[in-house]
Image (cartoon, rainbow, N blue to C red):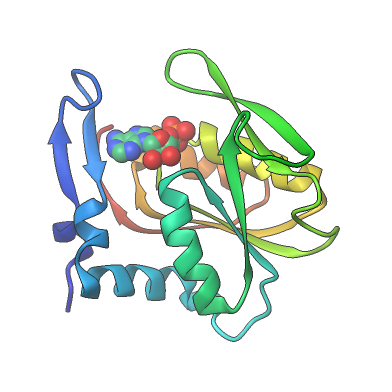
Length: 176
Ligand code: AMP
């Protein structure tokens, strides 16, 4: 059986000293690992009706597109400020140092549509929390948030569960 943990490469001190960067390009480049990650992430919703999968720029687009195809759902990009061409709603979210903004098209989701949020990794949960708020603001019923990697010591998944959204992760790394 493909070992997802072993397919993820760790780069020390990237993008800055002290960070262990969990690089999923090695997982994506491994056909078996990529398929397994997508299959395992969608497993609980196989056969149920999910209207849209929302992916967070940029790695959430790669996983989210594959997951949307697997679930026969639409795909919705959540992008950094200024990248989407039509009318948007935006939310500020906290980064390690300072804040940033992300956006979604206002008409990307119809009120009440069932949506799954996808990103590669959840650390402090600030990014995913912003994305959940954005999706709820345009009327989404956020049924779950899925990540290949959890950094449980940073308690990001707890932050998302506290918003009433179940969290699914496949692999955990200790530390940050
Ligand atoms: P956070 O908002 O703290 O949960 O950070 C999550 C976002 O930052 C995700 O989009 C990740 O891709 C990225 N990220 C945070 N920490 C790492 C890490 N150690 N390795 C790779 N990506 C990370």
